Length: 118
Image 1 (cartoon, rainbow, N blue to C red):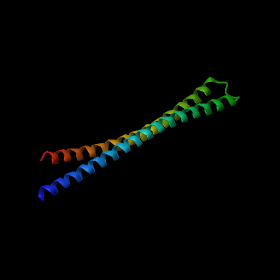
Image 2 (cartoon, rainbow, N blue to C red):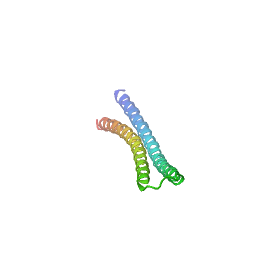
Image 3 (cartoon, helix red, strand yellow):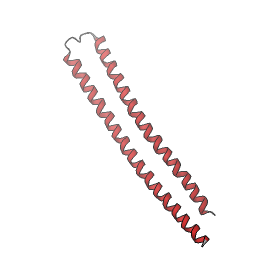
Image 4 (tube, rainbow, N blue to C red):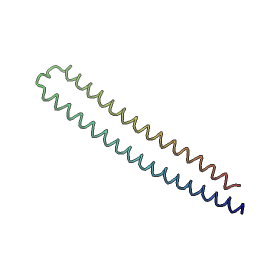
């Protein structure tokens, strides 16, 4: 009976590990999809900002001085950088969350392997 209970416990732990692993795989897939969506969003925002800034500069008839143009370009560059930094931070958070979950499952697997070697 004791051996049978031990086997049942090991099977439960194995099932939990498999479930956790599948959950982690799903989270990784979702994280990758979100990362790809963020990349597309960055690209879309950059194009939109460039198009908007070009239109503003072209529509301004008073833009004769190249220093004004340089100032507009610097502002655009700064907005690009801020947008990219924001999206990179979002991606870093996703990656860290995924890594922590992966680490947790690694320890579950170590525990599982230790039980199996008894």
